[in-house]
Length: 134
Image (cartoon, rainbow, N blue to C red):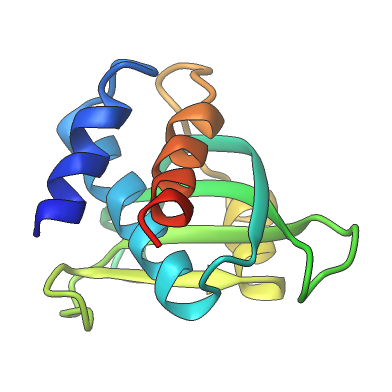
């Protein structure tokens, strides 16, 4: 819990974010840390938006790309962190998709954004915090 609080406090100085953006940024950072600990090198093109679910309801989504030294070489891989109706393993309703599934949502799935705010630096700072806390 202290680590999560430190991430949130550190990130507040990067870019002003809404509660919905903050939720997905935090879930993305935690999920990356759990599944690829210390491997995320960089993130880019991180954007918040909304996509329609199969039930035709709006769902918040965080789209972007990441590079991992160990897993992807020097290739950028798409990711999508989606607020969902299903309970995630971290106690929040979200799903994190990587690769082809994320591309379908983020590049083909008509994600609508209210602004063109790049959240890459905010997510990067949260990821970097995990590296420093080891």
